[in-house]
Amino acid sequence: MIVALLALQLGSLIAPAYACGCGAMIPDRNQRIGVDRETSAVRWDGRTEQIVMRFTVRGDAERAAWIMPVPGRADVTLGDAALFDALEDLTRPAYQDRHYFWPRGDDWPFDLDNSDTDGAAAPGSGRSDVGVVGRERLGPFDVARLTATDPKALSGWLETNGFELPERLAAELTPYVEQKWEYVAVRLAPDATGTGTGTALQGELTPLRISFASDRLVYPMRLSRLAKTPQSLGLYILADHRMEPRDDIGGDRPEVRFAGEIEGTQRDSLASLTGGRPVYLTALDQSFPVPSLIDGDHELRTVADTPYREVIYTDRLLTVGDGIPVWLLTVSGVLLAAGGTVVAIRVRRRSPAVRSAA
Image (cartoon, rainbow, N blue to C red; front, side):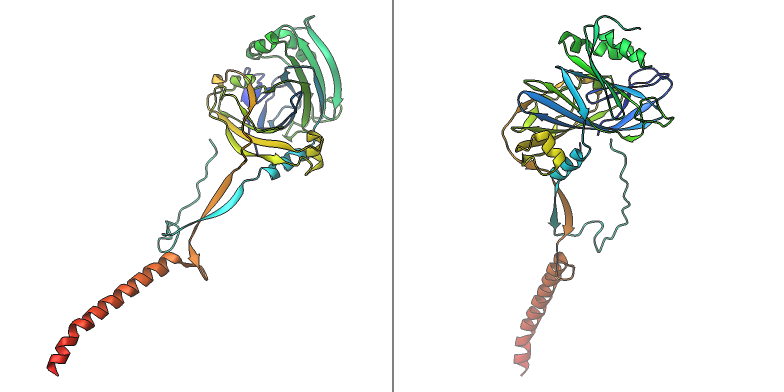
């Protein structure tokens, strides 16, 4: 699984905002929030796209706003956290032993003391040109579905709820406005009333499930170009066939971790997303070393249904019996054979001399 996304600052040091894979996270004034990980599962049947997202956050913010552009009218419900456990199990790598013959640094007779040194890896007021399509309370979320004909129109909703739209973020929303996309704006708070309890938003938040009509599979990524440090993307894609991005949109080449057909009924949480139908599951990872190079959203296309599962090998010294190295037996056998040959040659050379003396 995956599939990790780093939270990155968008605004000033006084009121920082953070980019995440398919949206923007904005904390309250004088507070900070970071998205340590964003895991997304995308279901597309050729007509409707569903995105289920789970955030793992940190920081001292008691409230935050999250904005996501969507290409059509969206329905928003709570997602099931168990979905990601099911997907992680299905895409888990295969583990295999791979044997080697000659001893290495941590094998006898070398027995070097190599310490593990694993480091950190290097994922104004309201305006007439904004419309509120719908608004509802979903658990800890206050969800508003908005339309906007101007990138700055979101400021009204944000200011009403105590947030400030960073100027750079407003500029990056322009392409979505031109394409007549809509927005899902979510106000996050740690209690059910949304008034705040003095407790910072921490850990895994309840997943959100966003559905909208779409005749193409698209995953919004453009806002991530505002990030200051490298990001990573992890996606689970459930469709009729194997799906892969059309291009790298300014990041490293996307890597496939898993591809294969699944029943779609292994878990209730999975069946609620697949409708109980068999689907093709593709798990992708991608890194963005320089986020400013991101030049668009991910559009995914159908490719050949070639199955794939990541294999992680464990290298082990080839042994037999009670752990006796094969190389040691081989070398010992060769040495014994060589020693026997030398003895036989010496005996043969001495035999004529013995006979002549007799």
